[in-house]
Length: 347
Ligand SMILES: Nc1ncnc2c1ncn2[C@@H]1O[C@H](COP(=O)(O)OP(=O)(O)O)[C@@H](O)[C@H]1O
Ligand SMILES: [Mg+2]
Image (tube, rainbow, N blue to C red; front, side, top):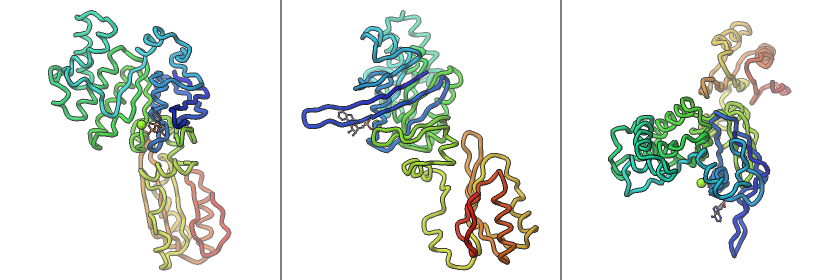
């Protein structure tokens, strides 16, 4: 649905040049919810604005629904943009217009008949749960309600793609959740492809299927959200992931554990495949003592995964064999953090 080839964006002013984006290559499949995450200043807004040419790329191609936007005439671009809706962090509503008039605005610009506009506005307001607010003004609405108006307006021309620039960043967590639910609903019901940018991993975790990580104008990592959570490669990605799942041990954990709790093993698991009895089987089989020191389970897109840190005490041979058995299991990833007898591999 969207393909970006070798995109570059340089902002030129009299004093300086800012390279905001460099060598960006991206592909977004139809029907996907694709997230782009990055710290402030990474180039996220620039990138998403390049997707509808609100920002003109310095070089590279932006292909949306089969058309290279960078090659279109002004008139063709205006048509092509109807396929691309956009919502913003600060909603960007027209304050002097009512909710219904805000949603009607793009339809009026497109020259639609009054009766059609009225019908369409009603449908859209119903879709976003604001049928009773048609005659209110933006200032009379909560942030979440204002974003719903923004979403209804963005959908007015039946776009194939919806771009979301930090659409939930000025909302509280509960409202964020409800807006993300609405976006999911729209993605499924209307089969709209969604590209969203955010600096919050929580948002990615909640609704995205694919994610790209942007840092200093470049995509440093991308893939399925679940893969990125389980195996982040880059430092910046690790920081984002740790912020929401605590897959790593709490700070100071290793330093604090000078009391003798035996060999330390970190077990990471994914999916339903993990036997509940894993630990108790081990205890019985090897006559060892197991202390559960840290545990954490989370769910991403219906797949549960988690981390468990155990301390294993017992005689060396038994402990070693127990660890070896753990390492040999396919369904878990095992990392020996500390052992009394060295030389054990990571499995
Ligand atoms: N209109 C502009 N003129 C000059 N520099 C800009 C402009 N817009 C953004 N930048 C610069 O480009 C970089 C990326 O900005 P932006 O895309 O807004 O990042 P993000 O949305 O990730 O915070 C920053 O260094 C920013 O200062
Ligand atoms: Mg931004």
